[in-house]
Image 1 (cartoon, rainbow, N blue to C red):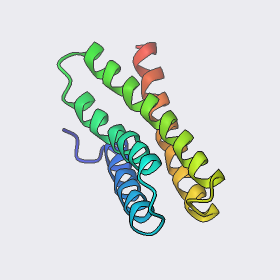
Image 2 (image 1 turned 45 degrees about the vertical axis):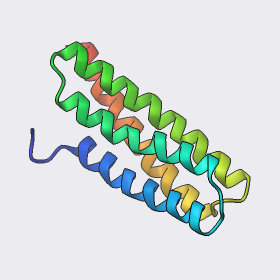
Image 3 (image 1 turned 90 degrees about the vertical axis):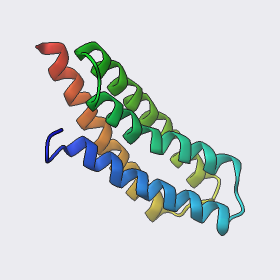
Length: 117
């Protein structure tokens, strides 16, 4: 494993924010369904990045990375929905969406690099 793996670090830090947001939703807003969806998809991004890093082949690496990308897209949906239904404020929404977009761009760039080589 590389010492400085940007996607690994960013997806892990994002997962921490997602866990804290989910905890807030449950503890303060008493929201149990959407928060679980957010928690599942938001933490799955980093988990699949970890699996990709440990992949057995280039194809396996790419497949797990693709799952991470899809989970990040889903997470964006839940963030927007939670904002539009007044469960999270605009500051939280913007922070999470910005982080999620950054992760999507990094994963997309890695996928393009793999496809072009």
